[in-house]
Image 1 (cartoon, rainbow, N blue to C red):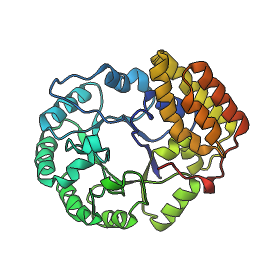
Image 2 (image 1 turned 135 degrees about the horizontal axis):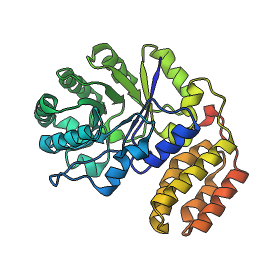
Image 3 (image 1 turned 90 degrees about the vertical axis):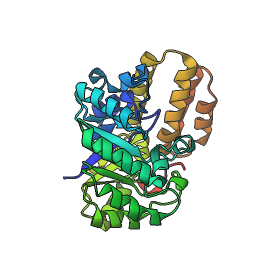
Length: 321
């Protein structure tokens, strides 16, 4: 049976998104927190604790994701997470952000294999939890992937989640499926595919080419259509009424967590960058959402979008770059 995983997306797939998506639609088999970067202070922030606390993740199979290259900090966080009841952490080697890469974190570590090897040697020996890895296929050249995969094969990685793009691609261009094919033939760790699964047509096309795939991670496609996992399992297509209910529940959760108007609206606008991809001819209404400075303006713009915009056909959906 196919396993469906919800990708960690900073500022988007937080605990409110997870709560609402899993309540209203078919839930993911695994959810991941947006990455946590442990520091030498060895303290979780209040925001990180909100993401991790069991009360905010009831009934959800949640895996915390860590980022960095300091083994001591990673092991402190892994130990704390074990005490909170988690038995697995995911290590982020996929984030392509320039500010992250410049600190030799995320996919920035993929060009620092000696440093990564030293890190892995220590954390795989001492970590009190299992470790899965989310990776890109390299920094600048797909030929880098052979050495990266050879390094991964030396360690007991619980699951290797592969976003088949380079760091320099960010989210543009198309995934390199030759790299995925190579990994499926050579990886010692169980694999999960990540990249450009936007609708049922995308999934069926991919699986027809790679029928042995056992696990798929979905990010942008699931934010645009929170019913996507259900549809991949045979549920009817999402309706506008369902998306409106989903948005209303996310909005109420965000208001309870962030009552201050300015940060609340910033968060909601980031959410709509992806959520709007399910609607046809939404540019005018989306512009009004982006320009809103007060919650009343925002609500009016959202109501206008739901009234005036129809849902896109699956074959017409493409995620924003």
